[in-house]
Length: 266
Image (cartoon, rainbow, N blue to C red; front, side, top):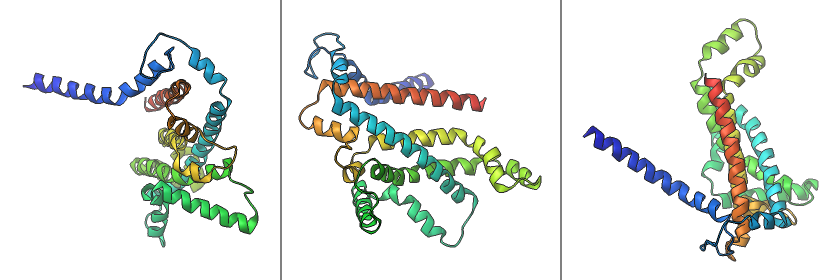
């Protein structure tokens, strides 16, 4: 009976993994297909990677998305870390419910509503101050940071609550100011969570279509918007090649992050 349960668990696990990863593996395989038809294999070829290198619009969109995702993840981790730390350490204070509601609002508000709200806010700010002059990388970055801070704060909050406060309290008893305790003790202890939160924010920004659609401007088309506009006319092999490179890039980030997280736990 135990042997049957063992094999049943592995069978279900294998089926779940196949369901998740067969589409990704198929995409990678067909990126090396010599045929222009996505469903017809005619031989191994690197022609679509060469064609991708000549596609300036697709490469420009990918570079723009990578820059925005990097800036978004960095800013979201900085802001979200402080927000999560406040939630985990400061207890309830005057206006706590409002603070939590505003911080978690992007988690429950549909992206369409969030994108419209941010667009209207930017238009009003532009009418009053004249900045920003037009929608572009700054407005997209602002919208993505607003979205990602909520996710980062949840990750950091859960990690900070798990910490043993005795180390922080000992440092405070020895005369260290709270800010120094945070940077020398708390921050190194939550470093794995910071890496995870950064990767999560990077992925969310790189994947966003709706918010970027409201906040982009002429000449600032992100990769998901560019790919979405092309896919509606049929899947192009260059998209498969670019997706394979993006999977390789993100996968490398994840492997490196897991490696350093494993070393910190040893």
